[in-house]
Length: 122
Image 1 (cartoon, rainbow, N blue to C red):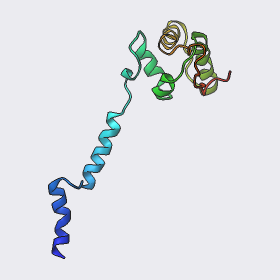
Image 2 (image 1 turned 120 degrees about the horizontal axis):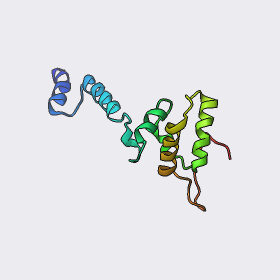
Image 3 (image 1 turned 90 degrees about the vertical axis):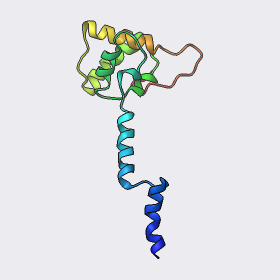
Image 4 (image 1 turned 120 degrees about the vertical axis):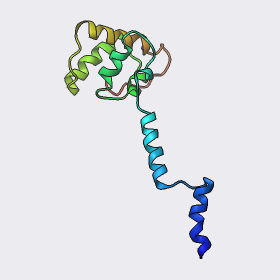
């Protein structure tokens, strides 16, 4: 019986088991390490503006998987303002953001199947 009581201590000493505190710390570290940064987006003028403007409401994954024309990106800004209450983008800020999105995430080449954008209906 005494041998069974020593087993957890022995496993911990050998590194074959984790204490609950270690698992909790690892989980917290994993969450911290996966936090998004502007570097989740391709380099380019206005990358940080796009990151901070867009991630106020959603992650970068939706941006990175979208493939739209410049006009569609521009229309999307209006749609998000009207349907989701995004602060309107105007002037130079809007131009920079739409230019970045159109350059980095352009419409798919003709003939290639593209995933539908969940925000727009064709």
